[in-house]
Image (tube, rainbow, N blue to C red; front, top):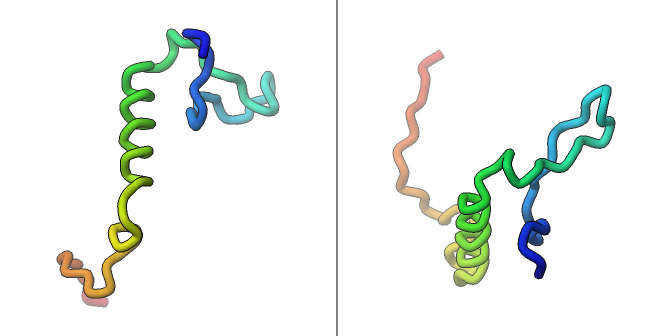
Length: 69
């Protein structure tokens, strides 16, 4: 892959605006390339986990703060 081209899976575009109705692609100076690469690597590693580690556990033991109405 040519250096400077977008990596697969990167969402590096802006929201729609009057000047750019479909958004515009960020230039490489407008984002942290190393942070994008690290996030993509982390996502790929998580996608290789066993299915039991995906989603919420059946018996979730995390604390939940309830508000009294």
